[in-house]
Image (cartoon, rainbow, N blue to C red; front, side):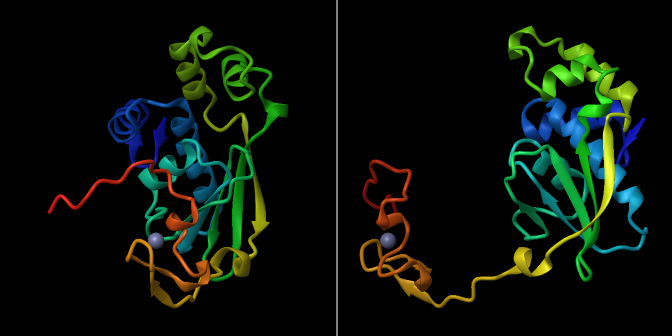
Length: 194
Ligand SMILES: [Zn+2]
């Protein structure tokens, strides 16, 4: 079985080096990317949406030109393990999701996605082996129309320099940047090192 241009085990290694571990979610995500891609006309120039920030973005970034950084991959956190590849000009696409109706034969995958067992009780090798055997059998693909306006809405804000931290920020955020509004995760910031 191939995932993208990789042999299954080779993709496991690619995931390990990129993600830090051969996460089952990314392996499944890779199968989902292939399934969506195969259902699109081959010449389609596509963008991607993932419905969870966990693992799935990495599968898309490893196997397609779409990244969070270039804006061709959007994370819309709906809490579902699903992704969509769609024609960036028409919004017509294919959504692939893990289908609970098809999980009966794959108890280890079912246990993983439904979190039926604590992580320490999961059998990793058995899970990977089921994913490899199942391929696309526990996934469903459907045609979908994406709301392009909602996804591509760009902020065309002016840039101000924040009067508190003196760094540039979008003026839409108000009189000071969001960091200085209390959204910052930092508790202590030292002086300039250089
Ligand atoms: Zn500031």
